Length: 117
Length: 111
Image (cartoon, rainbow over all chains, first blue to last red; front, side, top):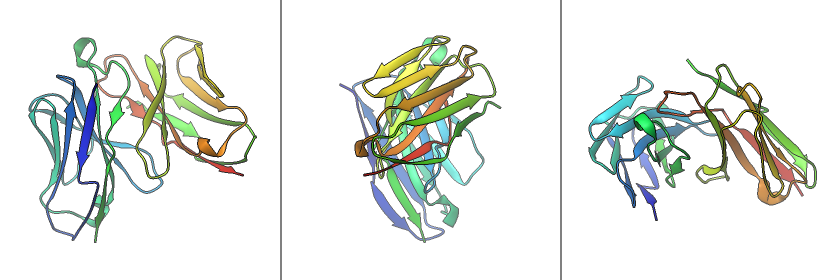
C-alpha cells in the first residue's frame, strides 16, 4: 500500500534561519507531488507542485523553493525564513491520469507545523 | 484564474441538527472532491463526484454535484460530535494538473 511520510512534524525557527521540510512517498511511482500551506484557521494554499523529477511549478511568489531530487521525494526549502512563513505545511501526492493530470484523490502527509519567531 | 468559493466559513450546530456546506466555481469543473480535516490533523479524502447532477451518499453524508458542474454541496444529517472538523471542496478543470480548494467550512457540534 502507498504511504506518505513528512518531517519534521513540528519546528520552531528564528527569523532569517534556513528551512528544510522533507516528504517521501512509498508504494507508488511517478506520482504528482504537492506542497500546501495552511495558516491558522485558513484554507489550503498551493505552494508548489511537481509532475516529475526536477519539474517544479510555483503557484505563488515567495521566499520558499521546492526540489524533487528523486521520483518520490519532495523538499520544501527556504534560505531565510520570515515571520509570515509560519503555518502548517502539508505535502500531498496523487496518481497521474492522462497527460499527468490529477487522476483522483490527494493523499496528504501528517503535516509540519512551523513557527517562526 | 479558477476560483472555488465555499460557504459558510463556520457553522455551529447542536448535536442532532443537520449541516450543509456549499461550493461554487467560476468555471465548469471536470470533477469535485471533498475532504475532511479534523482539528490538528491533515485533510482526508471523502469522495469524488464526476457526473453532472451526481448524488452520492456515505451513511449520514450526502454529496451533490450540480447539473452545470459548477456547484456542489455536502449535507450531514443528524450531526454527531465526531463530525467536528473542517470540510473542504476541491474542484478540478479539464487540463489542469491541480485541484483548486475552497477555503473550507469549519463545523462545530455542541453536545
